[in-house]
Amino acid sequence: MTATQERLAKKQKVDAGLTIARTELAKVRYHREAMAVAERRGELITKKLVEQQAAYLMITFRQTMLNLGTSWARRFVGLQDVHEAKGLIDEMARSTLTELANLPQKVTDPNWLSSVEGDSQEEDRIHPASGQEIRTEQKKAKIRRRKKTATMRKLRSKG
Image (cartoon, rainbow, N blue to C red; front, side, top):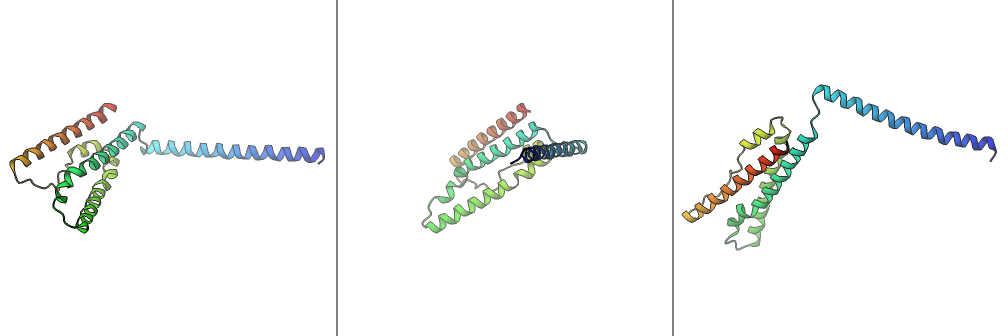
């Protein structure tokens, strides 16, 4: 390779590097401008709000999953057939997933925190027959309310 060819090859490498740098700079400018436009439109939300929403989603998911045993155990008592158990498990999974499917819509609402506090997850409860069962269910409901209240207080205090 001659000296001229070496300089040409070196110049092409430098030019390629500059082209890449210019492209990256253009991307950064584009994203910065897009963010500025979104901010002017009021389409941006704070990192703090995103963290609160994510925390709510995860806590609600966790509590729902932990409550499956208490809310479904009674239905499994006395089952004689594996097919019946499979049907109940399938029903449990589908109802839980349906319940959880609406969570993202709840927290994308600007007033999500106040709307969530008003929600009740006490829809399909089995009504107990004896006084002892009633007291047990009342204690469980009280514990759930305390947990929910504590969770909401944690979310507010982080805010």
